[in-house]
Image 1 (cartoon, rainbow, N blue to C red):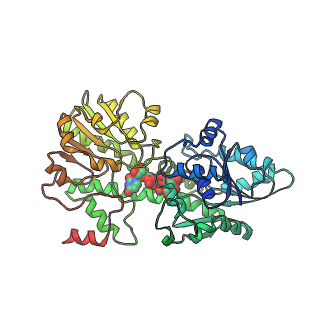
Image 2 (cartoon, rainbow, N blue to C red; image 1 turned 90 degrees about the vertical axis):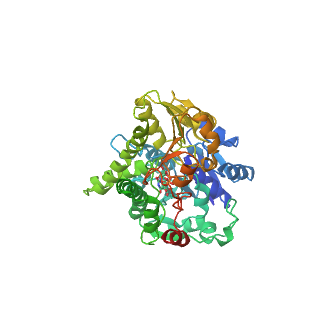
Image 3 (cartoon, rainbow, N blue to C red; image 1 turned 30 degrees about the horizontal axis):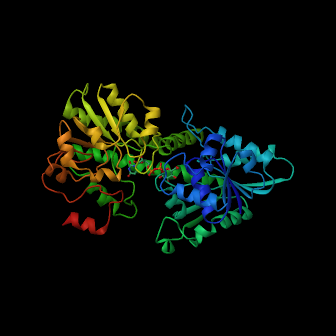
Length: 473
Ligand code: UGA
């Protein structure tokens, strides 16, 4: 099918590349000519594992092109709107880019075309889009509207796109649903050769969920807000564990074994960040308020999240007392591993607080240094964790990059001024760090256990029946 994807950000570019990979002819559009030229030359505007290979392969195969929106929409049978919906001052989503795309489509698209809203938008946006399209549509354009929210995560965007648990479509006609089914057929049936997932042939077929457009839009905001709520919940449980001498990892493991709760997104830490959860929770609160519903539960989710950095800094204050002129090494800048995205990254807020208190911060991240430098100059960015740690009085871990698991702690101990590690992502077993001679402070646990508790958050999915039995023994 001839498909246009408007917006070459994380969602748009990934969507365009994956649709091309499963055989469609895709024109991916952006207003930013510089970005288009970069993409045409095979370079990526951001880091996302495997995305570059897929983009490159499909450019060569002639299935993926980059154009400005005005050209990209001409003759398309389906147009995905994937432009940004950043937060306004009042927390609402800014829909200017979505409205502009609607106008471009109305004026430039031709024939019978399905317009699919993929950007995260407030409920009822599809209805407004439909009115706008009808108002401005040129002669000869027959377009139908659908909502198809995206659930991919940065860092695993390709995997998530090829192997989603569900595909949600909000439609008004059977024809719209049929066209979406045709677009997604290879993914729905898992009939394509997955370029990144070797066990693809056994991959589970996603659920196909058909709703009205309003419900589909709500599914997206409700899902992100619910996940954010889980994180804030476990963060509060972590605080309670610290206060009463319990271990949050074990508590999360025991809770997560109940399938009604589930083990995912129960990792405590320094709070959720990124361009989705903080803005989507805020937007959802606004949506509810405007509709006359006071979603105070979500306001508390936000409040708890905002307090995480102060709680984390307090841990280092407890050890170093006054932070002025103290050298602190910060490991991790991205809002989570496997991305170079620093938007609403807890690490950056952490740096701001430390610098405000006069600490001297040296930071290291495997991918996000350049992006962090651009928004937060004035601290020292290093090219290795060891360089950052030289003569530091504390190492603070803000992002759980895999490479930090393999740090040479014997070497670290020789170069740091004081063997203190304050870990905001619970990467290590406290007993192992203690055995290495490191004063290890993590989240939701007493500072240093002398006996190995057999558990740590060594991976993001922690619960398995075997592990639980091991704990219970
Ligand atoms: C999130 C959703 O997970 C996706 O389903 C959704 O499509 C996307 O937003 C979006 O709306 O576009 P993403 O922001 O890429 O994806 O990242 P997540 O993996 O969800 O992590 C978000 C934040 O929560 C990170 O800062 C992470 O460190 C934090 N987190 C996550 C925790 O603190 N604890 C956890 O247990 C899980």
